[in-house]
Image (cartoon, rainbow over all chains, first blue to last red; front, side, top):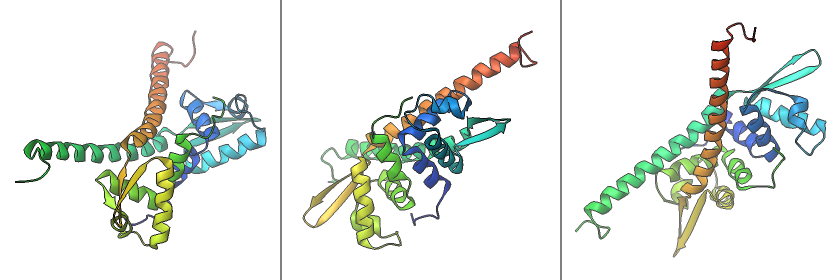
Length: 114
Length: 114
């Protein structure tokens, strides 16, 4: 349980703590998009969008490729999946504990061994 | 896709972007713990631990209760589950897209309609 070195999860969760960046990830989960397409529904300047994209790229959640003057972004599903797995593990532990507690209470309905 | 007002997910992902706070959530997923028990494996001062706990409580991920001089913390599984669902939705969209792409390529192996 010792605090780990700054990890990919630090950057992923930091990236996802902003609603505009989550909106971009939501959009890209449905398919690649250009920077302008990502910017269109967001109420912010293009430089602000580019800065958010930089955070998403550094986190590994988004990759992008420039062809001519157009930069196209896509989701990195593997990175998203790593973060999802962190939650899956917590839930598995939580449910295992709830099961153990249930078994215990079935055995000792008063909450403690006689 | 417009940027939403600061939400529970903002706070949850911000809380989880720190390895010490994730370590606390990992510990609490396995069952309640006192503040001292949470602090024991972490290489930091008790005030630092208390500050991290405050962030976790504000995010709604952790609840705590003080009995006498002992504060006991527990995980709020519902809040953890909300964040997990966000990832589940992204993956569902991603997989749906991958399926549609697969169907398309089966129909048009050259990548475009004749």
